[in-house]
Image (cartoon, rainbow over all chains, first blue to last red; front, top):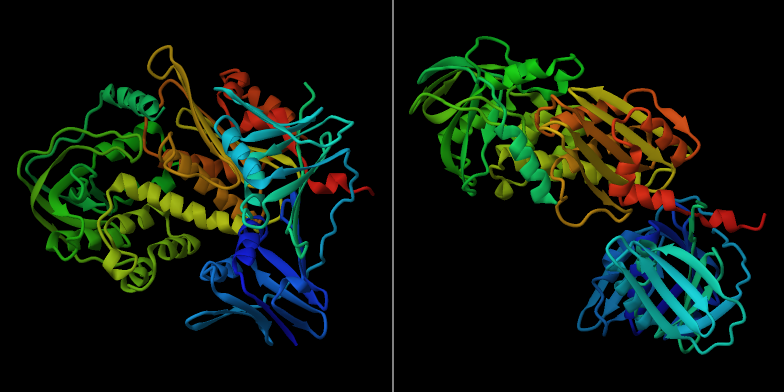
Length: 244
Length: 389
């Protein structure tokens, strides 16, 4: 049997807020170690990996590995009904993923499991020249700043600075941040702002984000809980500028 | 920009020197069937039938879907429209039980033209052109109005009696069953569909965009699920002093609409445009209803083929162009999408081909564009291209 209890619903909510805007269907795998999910959006632009270790849960039990296939939109609808003080219990039966929110009342939602042929995608294995940490809120603000002038964002590592910049028809914007890492190589890649915005919906997951950047390489954005009991990682394919 | 395009089209239409049909205070004729709900003074609007001073089958006069396939000329179309006399009465949009409104509903649900008799308060005068809906002839307040017995369209009737069916579902339902857009839109405008309490009259111009955008949104929901096209394609169509080119790109859904008005008034060369990224559009388009009409018509074709693509549409309107309403865009795009497509390796060769068909240098479109410029400047890669094998 499978049963997991979590005293804080916000971590599930924030994760699936991002995941449901990227993919329509997911396969959540549960085994003795915890829950994990790997998914690739339909256009193969964004990859997402979510992992909740069993220690994250207040109680966790999984006798044999199971696969939970759900429609992310349906799951999100249910998660939106959870209040932050609710205790969340996850179980499954024959055809349903069951979420119970317990507080003054016990509220049970069943989400139909879907029938999908699902081969968990594996992301490209990439070696990055740079890796650094940045406060999540700063990253989110930078994206908002850039969205005033453009739909694309250049993420740049230049010496001791991390730079987010954009050139628009009616103006430019630039945000510089001292990253405090030892970086030997500069890097620059351009991304769709719309795509980055989808990932940044997971703003309650962690206070810091770990970024890996290269030249015209996918962005690796990783959110890790301070306790290291949970991780949410995104990989986003870059936009590449035409030669002329 | 909206003032730009709206003001421009106002100038265009105000210069139309045409004759509408001459009728007296009493009119015996036929309604195609057709109704018109004005938007002025909303929510107490001027609603009424449109009647031609002719007997028998007048359906073609209010059936834009058949004009282009039947190769009607601009003059034919204007002729039909100028023959439509609009009677009107002021009614509240919620006043659906009113006997006059009930007759309008009868007309909207009718399967064919209906013999009609009207008595006007004064001799109907004038003519009316708009950027959104098809033009019509003279109008006057209507005092007495009678119609022959009406046989309802079976599909519309079913939707009318289903007062639990949401308007959006009703629209999609009718669209899927192949009921012509103009019929669906008329039924929608007289409040003949949707959940009981929410039914109301909807001004004709708003109802056109409401139907287009609702159907487009529902089609897009499906199209997002489909695999992405693997080439660039160009579809084209030319009619009524317009050229349309639709570019499909092998990307996820995104859409840009660009229209150039060339020397219609004098020496002007104006381009108006609007676009959306994958997430869709928030707020009303600055170019108006044609944005949604074109989006609906392209999505209809994508949904039919079960394929997803990015879409860029270029239109040129030339001297002699007359605004006939957004149906013009809808039907031209539908015709374009039903022609065989040309395939291209990339966006540049696709544009190079289109540039041989355009009067304006294609660079002018690029300069005005957002999305087209973006796809020319940079390309969204996929993660597949970073897989090591």
